Length: 318
Ligand SMILES: Cc1cc2nc3c(=O)[nH]c(=O)nc-3n(C[C@H](O)[C@H](O)[C@H](O)COP(=O)(O)OP(=O)(O)OC[C@H]3O[C@@H](n4cnc5c(N)ncnc54)[C@H](O)[C@@H]3O)c2cc1C
Image (cartoon, rainbow, N blue to C red; front, side):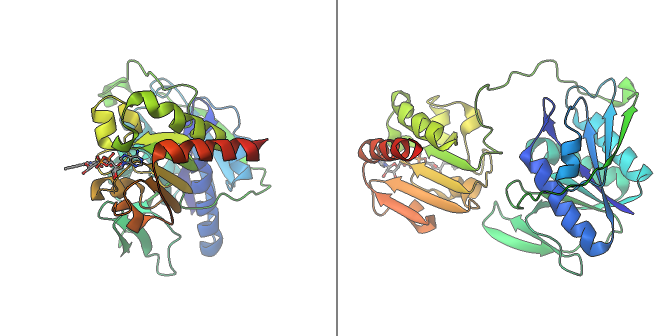
């Protein structure tokens, strides 16, 4: 019996969340005396990297209808391989793509599913997961023999292994009639750190006054190697693109450091960011609700504080 990990990649480069899922799987496999098989779909060049992060064996599936992500084609493929590998547990990252394929895989396998997983299962295989938009934690135990776990990105530390995994490359012909939706075109934000993958995020709210002031947010983010994010009103007003909007109705993130500038800390915003490991809030209003959720708070005008932070970051970099 094995644990199957779906290793997501971006144009051939594996995502950090895939390495986290593999490390998670290897720790679980060691405790349960299982092996870990990584499954990569589409063209990737660095399959050996999967062994460096916990895969005992690697399967790479290529074929028509698999070059561009499709929830239907990918979930069919993952379920097929899970059956062939006799996988009792399938681990999929809790990313946008992962969230769209994991429930389909679970249905195809007749498996129970836990989304939002943040830690290894206890001895009885009960798992800690996020609940109520990250405002609570739940412990869930599946009764099904087969299980699908969706691991939240940035919730499990990546480890390095020196495994030399066996690598199987398979051409699979996916029947086009089983795929009902097809992406015609993908336009990507280029040259930016993906928000869901970022370890540091610098985020701005309405307190930034207008899009013309985002240079400071971008400069600080650039110096820290961070991604940029924003509150909902900021993207609603088109100050920033919608893919930067975090919160209940936007993206959920879990970076190691979240720096919130001129954001009040409304509950809907916190829903998307409160799992960040460290939160630093910059707000001129000492009563802003965000300070209650902050690890570090700076009460001050963003237009005075940001230039000082930028200058200090430059000093440290030099
Ligand atoms: C159903 C629903 C879903 C929602 N989903 C989301 C969501 O996903 N994400 C989200 O963000 N919001 C969401 N909202 C909106 C949310 O309720 C808040 O209205 C929003 O988060 C406020 O954005 P803000 O903090 O940028 O703006 P404001 O509430 O206007 O706060 C601006 C903050 O900036 C501070 N400030 C002003 N000037 C300065 C300065 N010069 N220097 C420093 N600080 C300054 C102010 O003190 C204030 O705290 C949702 C609302 C609803 C009803």
